[in-house]
Image (cartoon, rainbow, N blue to C red; front, side, top):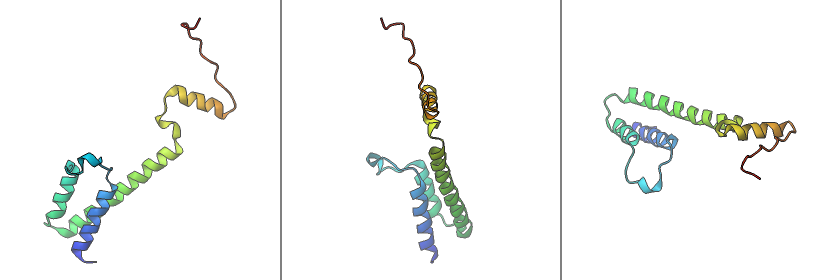
Length: 105
């Protein structure tokens, strides 16, 4: 693959790994997008830049996969404590008693 095509492919892959931007702000680039674009437009040492970009791409892919696996295997991670306790009790066949509310008469 030719050098410009390889750089373009790496740049696009890096952009795909970044979090999506809302449609309303598509015309303005984030500072990270600007920095990536600037680093790809400067060709001081292309061999070093390509290897760093490939390492960054692998890191971003691994982080995305790690987050996906963490959410899959720890579903209660983002729940409140009460909800997690209630679901844990239901998993073993128990229901939590209703809490007494002073205001109910």
